[in-house]
Image (cartoon, rainbow, N blue to C red; front, side):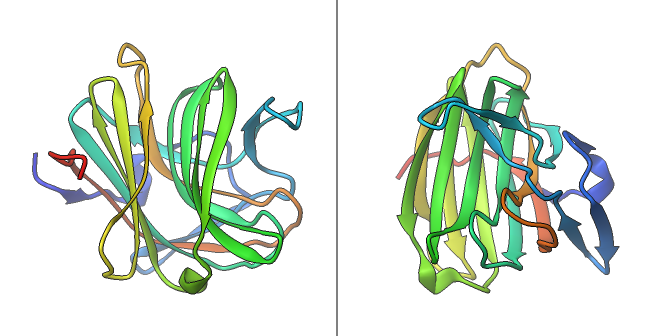
Amino acid sequence: MDERTLPWDAGRWTNPPVRAEAQGTDLLIEPAEGSDLWRVTSYGFVHDDAPGLLADLGDGEAMEVSFVLGGSEQFDQAGVLLRADAEHWIKAGVEFADGRLWLGAVVTSGVSDWSTGQVDEWAGREITLRLSRAGDAVTVRARCGDEPWRLVRLAPIDPALAWRAGPFCASPTRAGLSVRFTAWRQGPADAALH
């Protein structure tokens, strides 16, 4: 399978955004105020209302999303979402928290966990997240512009579940976040972890 660009109408929304507007080859998305994805851990709440535009992702395939996060307020976030159902999903991307920009992943199997690292130098630039599915695992990579890929996470998944993936964004604390998605691609999974 060669890598191919997916049209924005190739996916189905998990939750509809306030606005999704095609602008040339880009897609501008505004998530609802209060939208997020999280299950239980530490906070005790469940949020499952962030908009994700998802297409099927089979074993041996990769999904790649590029975007510019148009916000810098607490918990503004965007990236790629891999989802089977409300209790089995992974979101990976960047998020503003406590005045800094963080690259991370939340892996959820019944409950959520969160791994993260600071990437302030990526603010306002095009960022690409890539998920590669192989059997019972997903490899998450990220890069800014044409910089080298960084390994973000190697996470387990249930290969018996039907998985879908694509762009997502969320705005837990405010209205008016605007995220410009610049590319959505699908192709073969990365052959190696390193």
